[in-house]
Image 1 (cartoon, one colour):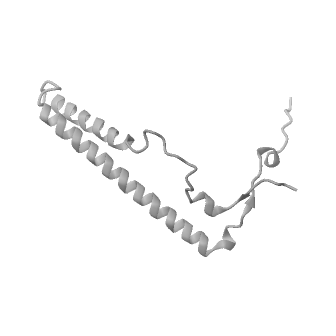
Image 2 (tube, rainbow, N blue to C red; image 1 turned 45 degrees about the horizontal axis):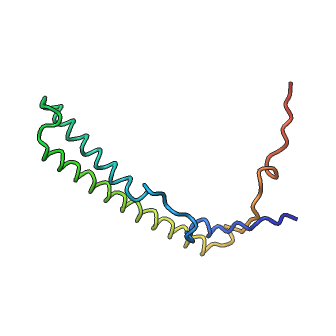
Image 3 (cartoon, rainbow, N blue to C red; image 1 turned 90 degrees about the vertical axis):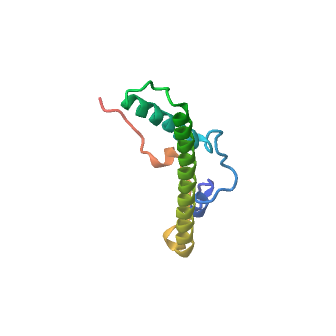
Length: 118
């Protein structure tokens, strides 16, 4: 008999503290937005045929705006993912017959043996 642990569908949608975010996870989107904002300022100056670094206030404003938008969209995505997981968790709790607990299998139990044909 297989003595591997049992897969519970609800465990997939719960964070029990065993998965830690990386160092860049909370700051990646704001930094990407700030870099994109700075790039937009450079592109606007280039499009108007000005020196690309002229008007430092424009670069600062676009960088801050890009960082704020990156942070805003990161928070919105977190809210969306949390709501989606809550809806899925609730559905699994209401329909436990559709999501039975299964034993975990190893690749050796699932894959067939391979014999090369030459």
